[in-house]
Amino acid sequence: IPEKLLNPATLVDPTKYLGPTIIEPIPPSEWYPAPTNDEFSTLDRPLTDEAVAAKYNNFYEFSTSKDVWRFIDNFEPAPWTVEISGLVPEPKTYDIDYLIGIMDLEERLYRHRCVEAWSMAIPWTGFPMRDLIDLVQPLSSARYVRMISFFNPEVAPVQWDRSDWPWPYTEGLTMAEATNELTLLVTGVYGHEMPKQHGAPLRLVTPWKYGYKGLKSITKIEFTSEQPATFWNTLAPHEYGFISNVEPQVPHPRWSQARERFITTDSNPTELRDTLPYNGYAEYVAHLYE
Image 1 (cartoon, one colour):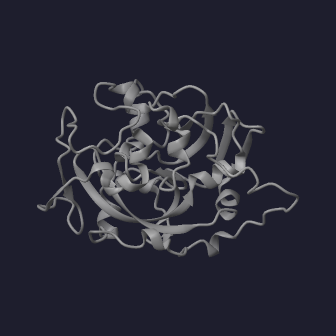
Image 2 (tube, rainbow, N blue to C red):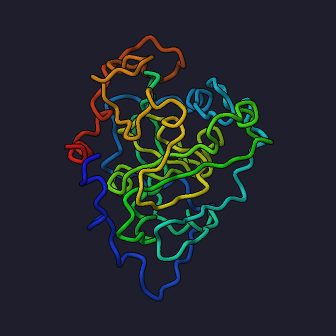
């Protein structure tokens, strides 16, 4: 991994959240629709139909097929807390409504690319992860961010059926990736609160990486000095790497990455598109890997 990905220097603004002012959270009734970020207000393709996106998901805690919506009724993403730990001056646990309420939410239109060679275009609502990092002020020794999802086999049937898998689902980023302007912690989609099958109440979106990096239903964020283990890399290291950028010239053992099925109004589309390096976001992230 390039050293620049691990160097915490200048990655955060150490003064943004300091001072005696008490931050008053915005109530949930005022979160949506959020203002659109002009830089990410258009795409080179149409948006995926909301109804299609709601019924074609990977959320392996609930189903190993795409019909997650059928199995998620018993999952309750409220009340919810997010624990901040590891290499921080003061570990904290935030109520999710408070955390979202003190952040500046914005809508961004992003391309979404799954390693299974299908893609979508989604209007996410959330806040840059670097804003959270500004808030919690990790120590200079923090080189990675480890994120952990929930563990509750009573409501997540695959956690029960596949107890040999390395639950809870975990993912990780370098500090440079976590503070990149593209990296979004998402709370909503299509202009409203995020449905459970998309990863409510808080998920990660890194649009230049394959979708499995996008941890859903985050419960813990830990700052570490060592590269953290991740779910799929632990389960199948020959198939899933830690970095996992979209690279059309590098085939997966089971799927060519050169082209993708673009899903708009049909979950089984015939349209194929050439896959773009870094999913079309090279100008934002390619320098991280030079």
